[in-house]
Length: 230
Figure 1 (cartoon, rainbow, N blue to C red):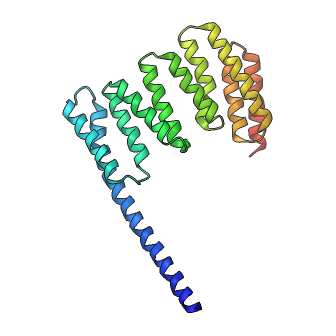
Figure 2 (figure 1 turned 90 degrees about the horizontal axis):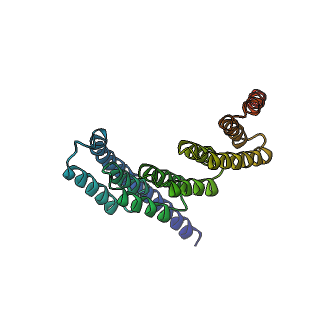
Figure 3 (figure 1 turned 90 degrees about the vertical axis):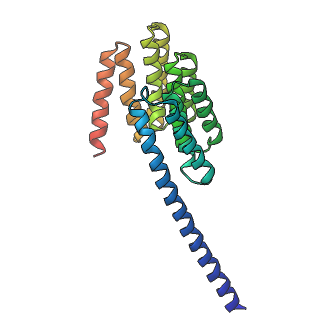
């Protein structure tokens, strides 16, 4: 009985190793294929106006064929984003929006992919001058991923969007909201990466509000904290 169990375990281990090797081989093949498709896409991206519609259609089909052939590949989510970018450079903004929204919904549990898709979505809104949805998308990143590198930067970005539109009141409100947010982060995470980034971005808010003295004071404090951690 004991010998049978040992044999059974050995078979399971062997099977696991074989399946792992097959999976690794499959992913390697997938990586090679997507690399070749990306080379074609880069040619289009380097001069999008010169590329004929057939070139776009060919690359899009190659991406979709890849997804159909390797549905379980870790590269599939990024491939969907690449298709969205292909629509974007074609100025097919409605299809780009549709694709990025699909990715956000389909891969909502993958923070990296979700953030990337939201950033791409924001680019479409920016180009189409849909500022309400642009700010709403930025606020979603801020709300759902506040302590990521991009999440920490977003409050400042929102202030700068309002500034670029010469909406002084909205910009001032945005910067003050950002400052309140950054101050909370600094209190809650005094010696962590988030606090250092919060101090840096808070100083940007102060500068854009014309409060140079407070900006300089915060930058000085940041330098001291940085020196102590070395």
